[in-house]
Image 1 (spheres, rainbow, N blue to C red):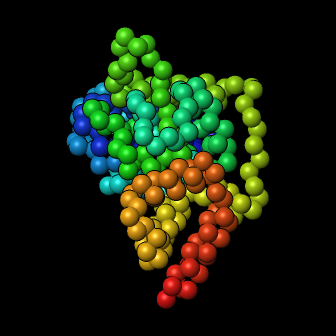
Image 2 (cartoon, one colour):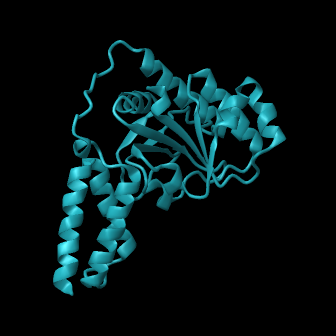
Length: 242
């Protein structure tokens, strides 16, 4: 199931951190690395820091946007070091490992890491269904990127070896599987266009409204069939407006 798990690094500044993250991944049996608009890659420094994990770098997928890196994923967890004004479901590192591994039995999943200094921006966290925080001692809570990748990769690997993990049967009907990240993004865009066309927002802040909708659907984890139903409703509302 580890082959269904993507590690996504967003806008990484130091190429050495990419190499160190690849090494941390391979230590724990993870090989699928996605790089979103890295500052300096390919890089000799990245290869040097990867040591014997250069094969992970060679297979790494480099894309321009986070949405591209998450295409086909039905569960996305994003790392964060601080609380947010809008509360996504939050898990610690151990819960994250168990969640991602169990979900990977059914579909592709992703674990997203942000920039070294600023982490993930709010609009990037909106692509995630869960936020992950690594517990640390309050006297010094700073972890570098490769350390964070190592900790969470270890928790995923530990979950893969546990005999107590929950067994889930994948649905035989494709439409009853959880919607993928790109399907959800298309639905959110459809929601925005429909509400805007109906003059729903008025004095409301569209960004805040859409963020609340993302939280709602992130918690409920709609299936592909349910997304189709919702988009059919939106299309009907657009047609009536016309």
